Amino acid sequence: QTPPCLSRPTHKKMSAPLFSGIPKGVSKRKVLKERRVEKARASKVVENDKGCMVMHGKKSSQRVKDVLKELTQIKKPNVKLIKSKQNFKPMDDFSPIDILSQRHDCSLFIFGDSNKKRKHSIVFGRCFNHQVLDMMEFDVKQHTPMNSSGKYEAGIGHRPCMVFQGDLFVNNDDFKMMANMFLDFFKGKKVEKINLLGLEHVIIVSAISEEVIHFGRYSIQFTKQANTDGKSPHVELIDIGPTMELKVCRHKFASDENRRSAYKVPYELRHSKSRNKNIDKDELGNTVGRVHVEQQDIQTAALRKYKALKKTNKKAAKDLLEQAKRTQTLREKLNSRNEDGSDGGNAMADEE
Image (cartoon, rainbow, N blue to C red; front, side, top):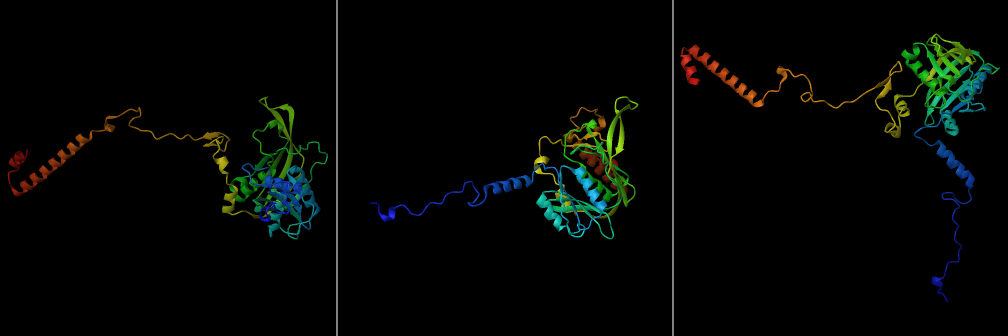
């Protein structure tokens, strides 16, 4: 018989989990889904298309609801409409937006609200790392709804052509940030090439004054009538809405430190082989390149050489310098002897 000390243990061995890292008793399907969601939301070198949250406050006028509905239609499919009423003011307390941004994985948001000072308030904002970066508030003074017929409506996901009219978008820092934010909202999916004949609509933002801007959306139609060159088609713009007159109200921009971290380019993109270095475009759209040339030796270069620039022998130059010093010393001695009345000529001859 086997001694008791060497007998096998009587307790049962615990079974290993079915999948590594998933404890027993937890739904495998639920855990795997959470892992896929975390992987999709993780930071990437090339980020996904920016999503946009559209929400309204506790009290919203009918005009605000119509504007939010139309902006949702333009932003499809990268939009998340939150139907529940939000009981906060983004310009006063934006901490709930940080939570909603992380929950829905959206970096852009539009918030509509009505209050005593601004009856039709619309707030455009963007986030970085699920934290509010910039916000701008507008008051909708006039609003023309979208064309209900849908005859000239652009397809879902089509990139619009953005046009900013006015010197303020060049000279005013706040308007520069406004143009950058509108581009962030409506630029759509990033593409390498664009077919000009495939452009279906254009968004024109005009700066009427420092307090009022005009927002319009138009359909691009190509007709058979040709221009003077006879090559490109004739372009017509048809107003399809929405058309709004917005009053610029409050704004909150990020600090320089947060903006630098938001604009930072990843290491992989900065050191990629496909990246074209020292190539840029000027204001006219011309491609400008910078060429770095090694330092050239003028002495060995095949240039026209002048006698005055010839390199002299160091030893000959040293002898000439010593001879000049000797001559100067003799002249000083001769002058001193002439002053004393001695025979300077004989002294000069003796020295020679």
